[in-house]
Image (cartoon, rainbow, N blue to C red; front, top):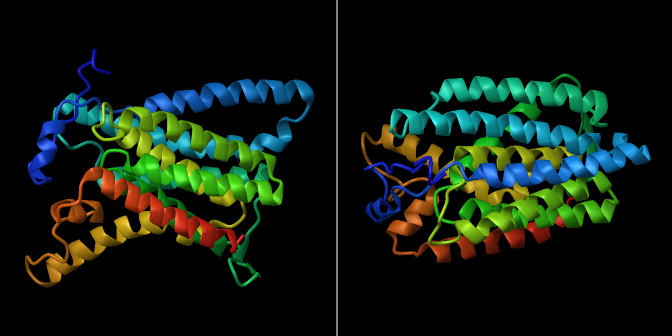
Amino acid sequence: LKGLKAGVRILEIGPRWHKSKEGTPIMGGICFILAMLISTLVLFLVALRRGEIYGLLPMALTLVLAVGNGLIGFVDDFCKLFKKQNEGLLPWQKVVLQLLIGVLYLVFMIRFGGLTTVLYLPYLGIELELGIFYYALALVIILGFVNSVNLTDGVDGLASGVTLVVGIFFAVAAHLISDRSLILTAACIIGGTLGFLVYNFHPARVFMGDTGSLFLGGIVVGAAFQLNNPLILLVIGFIYLCEAASVILQVGYFKLTHGKRLFKMAPIHHHFEKCGWGENRIVFTFSGITLLFAVLALFGI
């Protein structure tokens, strides 16, 4: 990436101290995406030889969802580098492509992955048969959380640190319900994010870019559907939700008050930066909060 001069350009509207990060290679998400794909390919070949490939189909479909979103991020990052500015795909183009990938994922997941149109309500133990409405809700969840993870990527090590904890949650949950496919998905999340943190922890030597953050969003959402408990993302993904909500509230408040701001800057991790928090403090605090919600989420599976 350094050889290709794939360095990030920092927006003037961002925190002024981020200017020192200009030139840091982006698209680093390619690293953990390739690592996951190579290791799972070996795994699939072994499973195929043993006649156990069918049990890994949910994991394969989750990776397809993740890679599909990662490709959208890759195109976005590539456009930014090619145009030498912080503008890639237009928002509506991203949404259309993400919807298309989400629809294909749901169709194949219901056909081959054992997913049904029954929605489980965490903590209540209630199951609701939603029929065709399940697809609409599922698409909202996919679109919302994939982009929420993307918004979380703005401080060195934040998206990878928080997602590492989320991966640990899915590993424990998979162990409790003895779901081999989900255990392997969780292993991908843990291995990929932990390995990437070595290079992404402050001061970051590489950024994952939209390539990595959209991929992570896809694999996290896919893991929740493998668990047949997509609403658990409302708990385990609390930080993701806060990041997205802060942007929505900031924009809404700005328009309603004709120029006033609710936060010093959105997403909310930048608000804490402007309050004087260091990047490592933000990462450890947000990851610690995620850990607390992970424990809480275990009671909802």
